Length: 274
Image (cartoon, rainbow, N blue to C red; front, side, top):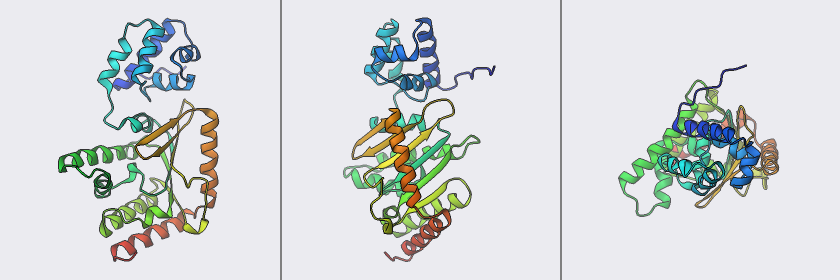
């Protein structure tokens, strides 16, 4: 039998303590989920340290386990640096073994260059300060570290052609950004496909979508809109999301064709063409 891995991060320690307290109370993940009003899959993600419960979930956990506010108080020390709508997805992103992402209008955050990220933040924060932008850019670009480690996840990146054409931050910023994506694909760090305009309507045309798979837990899906994000762990909805991704991918250009289109778009931006 494999030896259990020792928790390393504070989130993993939080999850391990939850697992031990649940076992001591002789509750299954399903039974605890019934009392917390969430799925057993979500309880398993809490215990693995992939996700943190919301404050009201932590309060219900304390009531179910008779822990007198222990998990709710500890949760206050583990607040995420990300917006609430993305915080849970950011936790899972660090643990995923496979990430399949689709972008409709912007380069996915984990692939953004600092200059591109700054232009994105500047666009929807009209009263920003330089210091605020610097902080947001650092947080976003730090996410790319998941691509550098020895156990980095497999990344599939599917881009609508609109991502290549929308000039974010100016010509040189776009050229740098697109060359970075192409360089990563050619180096084998991600699998790249583009859905060209010629495809017309496709199954993912309404939303950004990220699918995440894990070594020892059920997969999840994450969709995002304006100031909102929804992490989906319902098996039927995750399966539907996976099907939509597969259908869209079947209409995409091959990796070589996609690379050629991305490089060509980068050169067009670099030379001021549009």
